[in-house]
Image (cartoon, rainbow, N blue to C red):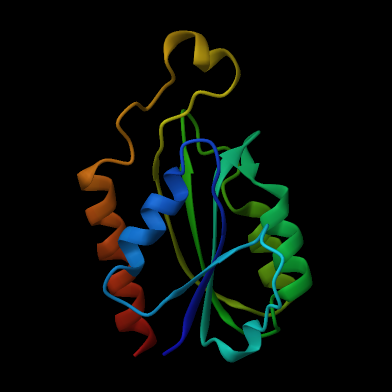
Length: 150
């Protein structure tokens, strides 16, 4: 079972920490959507999309990547981190997946340290996240997802 997780993770690297925890005992390929590379998602059985929440939604680079590279009919899942509010979460990516007749297997989210804008003045919010429990929950989610895929 080949799994790719296409992601955008900046600032504190919260999303990447979660993905690395998920992929530690698997052979999932982590694909940075901002890296200049040839992408062939057709070879994967399942594709994840991951981002921090920026302005109440996934980073636009992830949505653009999904629009361009997500093949029709694939199994997909979503992962995201957020400081204070989940916002719309993966809504934009879900809509792209729906238009491409993809099967959504689920989503995982957790808090992530956020120092954007006014939060910087108070040292940020969700300090210490993702924490050990968050990362274990991420591993559990991914393990269950892999079992569902067979």
